[in-house]
Amino acid sequence: MEILVATMILAVVMGGLMSAVVSGQRYLLHTRNRISASQAVKSKLEVLYKEVRQDTWSSPSNPLRIPSSTSSNDCGGVTCDAIVATSDKDGLRKVKVDITWREDY
Image (tube, rainbow, N blue to C red; front, side, top):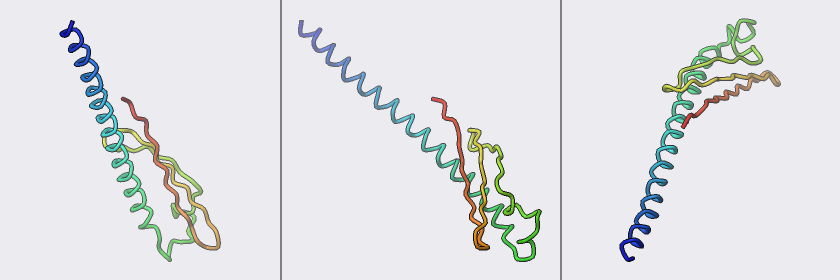
C-alpha cells in the first residue's frame, strides 16, 4: 500500500515538473520570436530613416509619403508581416510599424 501511495505522489510531482518544462520552452520560443520581430522593425525603420532628406521630402516617390505598405519578411525562421503606416499632420510624418507573426507550438 505504501508503495502505491509513493508512486502516485511521484507521478503527480513529475507531471508538474514536465508541465513547467513545456511551459518554459513555449515562453522561450515566444521570446525569440519577439526579439526577431523587434530586429525586423529596426531594419524597416533604418531603411526609412535614409529617406528623411530635405531634397526628396516632397517627392511623390519618397516611401514616407505612401499611406501604408505591407511586406513579408523572414524573422529568424518565422515569416512575419510588416505593415508600415505613415500619417502627415502639420508637416510632420508619423511612422508606425506593426509586425505580426504566427507562432506554432
